[in-house]
Length: 330
Image (cartoon, rainbow, N blue to C red; front, side):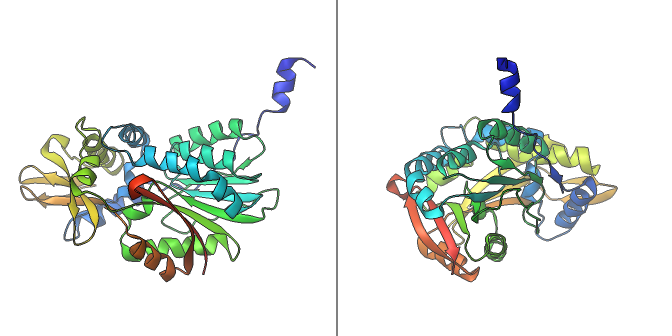
């Protein structure tokens, strides 16, 4: 048998996509509802079209934004402990999988993972990262789902039964949800993993205010471009007429709520249209688009407990800059 034939025998089967991605009608309805509220809002889940996903990857490489680099280093340093705590033959279910950089470390470090289900709203990034992981881990069945993970998502069963499920939610994405939604999402994870599963969660920890604000206002303006790209997507997919030159990115820390609050601010009094509906904005009026909570242990433990989970293991980066928490059913 020649080398080409041998390679073909070990080539992984192409991942079969379960496509539950929101439609333009979903986006249009969400945008109209958000702009009709007081204060005005836009859903951050729509940041991640193809361009938005590319810009977010650029954000993670900016000098002010060390969250991703810190989490990757912590994941590498803690992998042996994570492997022992999770056990063999897990089915990994990742929420908001993105580029899959952290996933590669996790799948490579676990003991004989049998399947991987990324749940990601950006179809292009999902297919690209899953295909790359399929070649890196041909023994792991790839079961990607294109969906909004903030809603109930069916998890495809693997061909090889798994010993348990491991929910993976890195990047402090949990911090993008308010208290009630965070508990609801953790409770959904609790249901997904069952009575013997685990959940590995990344949380950004409270630190110097100037440092936290700088991470969301990088000097190169990549985060601003990422935020304002949302308007370009809404124009394209929801029949809107936002002029991005008339809006600015703003991200500030709220000490009362222990979170970064990101808005798109109208630079002038103006009227924008979405699917034929008109919305007036005053000069300086914000459209709220994202929150990013910064946690203490007491805060996070309370969220987990409210969802029927408890912290089984804690790993922190140097100077407590970032944390990984392994949860199990309470």
